[in-house]
Image (tube, helix red, strand yellow):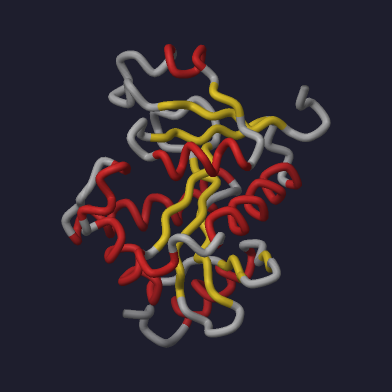
Length: 190
């Protein structure tokens, strides 16, 4: 449900316009809107979200949606809706996010089931990571559930390297056991 027409809706539209829109060969990364929540909930409320502490209830998914989108206001970075340039279909989401227990920004993504296996995650994360560097972020990490072999493969394809020291620092945070893959800015990468 979109905001009620009027000044509040106008403000929401102006705020969305401040989020940098990114385009790749096949994708458009744009500010999430309330119209994108059904796709978010489809992913987070399904068993497919097991690698992200799911499945969530619809209310929990909305809380995550609002908190993650709010990161643009609080931190100057956040999620993008991944949209097909050809069809306009919402394929998923890619984020430069930082949850309260995180020590540094995270590069994360999640796609709708039908969008997996087409290279969209790689295309979107390359673009989002480049924007992270443009925003001056010194490094990014990807937190990955060990059984999620596809995400491990993508992190390695992006050139990220496993950071066991960062993994050890997760003790006592509720994220113990996650793999941490570090993405270094190109000018400081080994």
